[in-house]
Image (cartoon, rainbow, N blue to C red; front, side, top):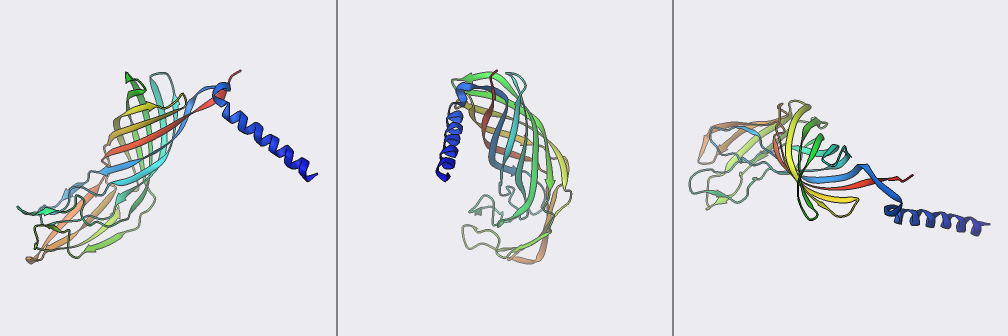
Length: 259
């Protein structure tokens, strides 16, 4: 009895596998596509730093999420996605004087960030420009940022970021980061190069710019330089969601039964 029940289940499993493997021949293209996006968001903040010692590049924010696209026509796609990204909680400074060069591009900021939900709504237009399996598309839309991590962060860096040549004056920093606004809308504009792997799969490299419209995160504090310890330099860094973005996307077009 048990053996017969097992054999029946095995037959059902085989039918499901065969049906799945033959889906390309029995199904037609749907207008909906599912996919995954992963990349980096390079925040471009506003600085108030009269001394000019702060790094102008913040650590890139790793961003990953899922997307759903609808093909309105051969030229137009509409897409909505949900990503998990971060806003930086740290900044760094170096002895920015003639003859001194920092060893890193981003400084000693440490890890961590304000966890943020990013929801882009995009229209994607096929330009008609292509070569082989490659095609060029333009995209634009509105991105919603929602900060769901609103803890205040405090930090200090005792010796600043090493520079060349050594010895060089050390920099001591103290700062506090906090969320100013939890919700913001920002327009996005960019392009993608798409590579068609098959009828159902395509890969894409995306480059876009986002223009922030509202202050999201404030990082402010002071720093001192060891050769002039009595002089305190104040600074503030405001992140608005303005960024340059590099993404890789993979999309799978769903199928529907042919009647």
